[in-house]
Length: 189
Image (tube, rainbow, N blue to C red; front, side, top):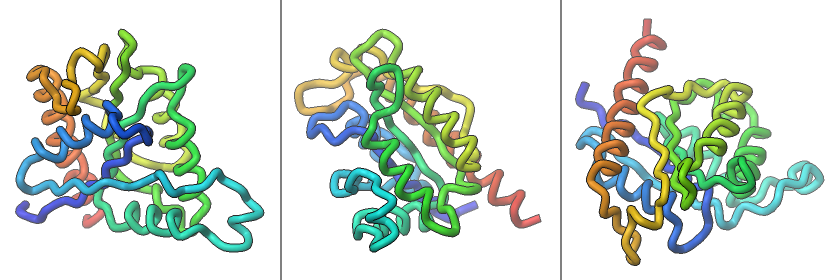
């Protein structure tokens, strides 16, 4: 297939020097030529409030939901906060999941995480995977990318310095493309 896949990169971190956002940049810059990765901006999404939603869905949520719908696949990069995914990511998912039709349903997705811990965000990935089950996303199981001791793998400008990590991220993006095309082919039968 020569069609270019549109992948939405979603970082669960708002930090300017986020290792997870830096990992998404590595994914974008090393993606195969038939995969285009654009980024979602979660910074303007307010805390979820059903009363606010009932009155008017915030513009940032509408934009995020449109990006999800327009994407062929999703690539999440989440930090681990208190043994789980970040509140920023969970909040954005909660907002978007209330839209109808639910935009995550049937979407191919992959997860990576970067953390200063030795586990690399594995528990955050576990919780995100559980949410994906409920949201009916099709999460790629392997390869897994958990960037442990992220502070030692990125330089002060946020550039990845570890080639093994770059290879893992590239394999993940390539596998997400293959997975997405397999799922798309199944839909056409």
